[in-house]
Image (cartoon, rainbow, N blue to C red; front, side):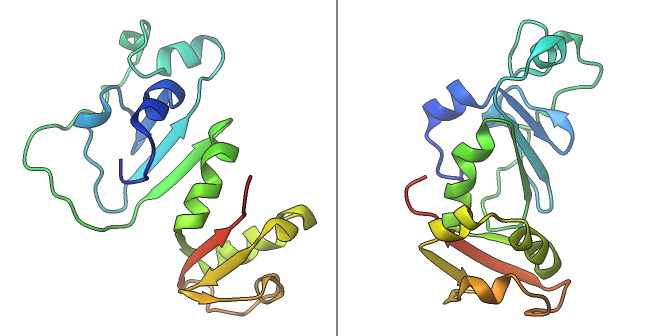
Length: 160
């Protein structure tokens, strides 16, 4: 995976994967395209979790077809996708995503930063906006960038 996740972590911990709203059973055969949405989750409880679990015994009970698109040539290039992290994966994976960098609109960034606790800000070692260091106080206000502008952001939270 391009997310620099260890294969054993993906196999052991990420039990439910959706690509553009469709379940993925075989990680290697699903093709992510420009503007795709990838949702990752650890084990979910109950019958729904058992049915949605990647490669689970109850997977055949799904009403929609899994997202398997291994046909054709695999293209490797940079692109933009939406990644959604659920349940236990959020605290485990979000710091790494933030450290490597994410892209979001300035409006979404402003909402995100306004909702962070003092503990979050105290844990930030470095914040980079479009590759340049920035003070945290500059991000908690409004109007530091046009609302719909894409903002490349990386945050080093230190040891989490």
